[in-house]
Image (cartoon, rainbow, N blue to C red; front, side, top):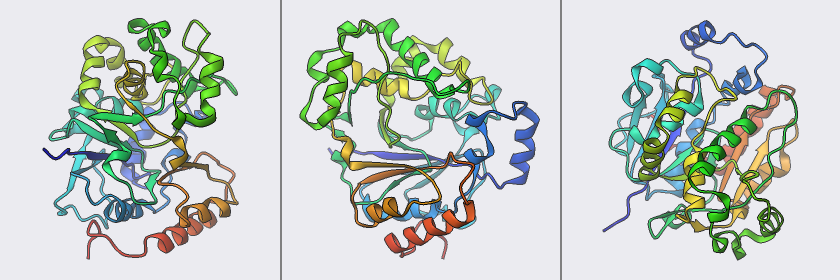
Length: 330
């Protein structure tokens, strides 16, 4: 029987005036970097996400494009593999509208018609070289890497760090660190990251997990398991209109697969990550030269020259993926 793997990607149209007005009614925290306007800037490169899927992963079963309701004007909703999904299609009415990505991601397994095995992309994560099913799943298990990390803080606004600890609190409640199989902690594909595990394994409690910003391979059954065990805690996150320090995230499902050994080790060298700056030439050259299979192009810098960098990004993608895809209207 052929293994079916779906892709899920979430998207926000930060230029939607109606959405902006509704969001402003709820957002009372103006200095919250995690929910700042740069989190919603439109780089006008989403069409290249679809071109990359058509070019590099034609085997994908279905693509679920998740938004609050808005749709890019160029998107061909008639494409046979495309499923347009609104938050109202899979999230409880009482938690909507939401501007909290954690809340949305915790409910992804409720999307109608979604396969057991799916890969979740943020809209800043792109395929940039050919990929196979085995890059995401093998023997029915997600491809991933169990690498310990030490959670650290940089300032008073550390939502992500708190979220990591909230996830780990759930994991530790059910699977103490000393029950994690040592055989899952060391693998040739981890490379020098084995040193992290060597140094952090003796610590009695979880100190953190390495969380590369990459597409995550998920199992709906794992998500169901955690919801059965921690419904109250997970639901509490979904009631938060914006990301908070009390949130859990979809990483908790990934952590569960890692500590239970329900994964196949993979190398992190196939992934690239860039926090956009004014100068990104080398990273763009690496993408054009297919150094990576997948990349995350992160927008978290208020100081960059937005229009200049956006133009350079579009030029790069036009060089990499010049042909329109069937996901674009004629």
